[in-house]
Image (cartoon, rainbow, N blue to C red; front, side, top):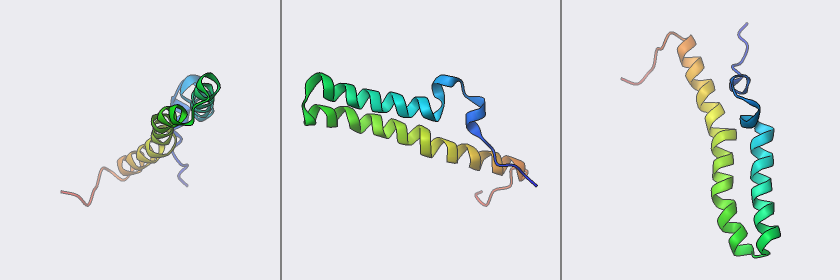
Length: 79
């Protein structure tokens, strides 16, 4: 029985899901606490949320897919 690939086991503490979430929330909250301007907080929040989405959703799925393909012998339906 194959165990699922866990990409987080290869990352340092500062690149773990909890640290990414805490950093993102801290940046967004910090921008609000410093400026008290919703438009400025939104400008900060958009790239931070995109960064969090990339590293918490897209990257782990891509790594799991890549590992699954490599375990299948590299066979792909694409030419």
